Image 1 (cartoon, chains in turn brown, purple):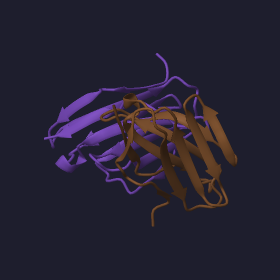
Image 2 (tube, each protein chain N blue to C red):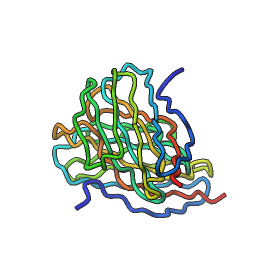
Image 3 (cartoon, chains in turn red, green):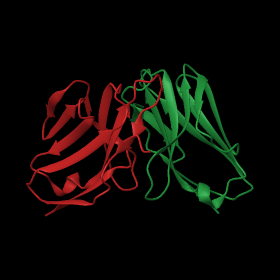
Image 4 (cartoon, one colour):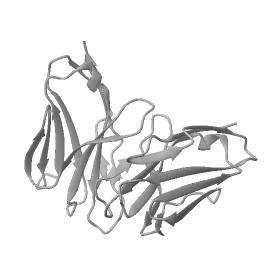
Length: 112
Length: 112
């Protein structure tokens, strides 16, 4: 059973639209949640961290966390073709494990 | 130099060769990681070092041998690899176990 689940996509949105990326996790004691962006052939780049329930906004990005539902999402407003990438959800399970658990990623395509 | 740097960026090696991948972090972190990312597959955690001590080894074959001489440097020694070991090898570091992880640019390894 996967610990961090993401829809692999591709998720296709038109330029200027809102892209909504979703992630669920299985471990209720998870404490920290992260979104990474990975362009093809490149390494993952941290774009958002969220630690408490609710919304956290940073520019065009909003992360949303609902621990009761074990759900974390990333909204990208005014999507641009340059946002086309794979978005990885990562979770600190809080079990003492020292590494983040990554989902398999959602590929986003922003159509010009 | 800032962040996490990996060398070499690209490596082609024969199955009988011995080579090493190097990672250096300039962030003052105390945990370092090796990940493998094969084509169209999710990140696979290979090794975790915390305070220079190996704390996790995810059933990685012995032809991969990690070394962490200090908190800033991490090596992955490779010998008698197989073609299926061709992948992007990523190093990452974080300040505490399970915190925000920052990745190096990766080493694209091809085994011929």
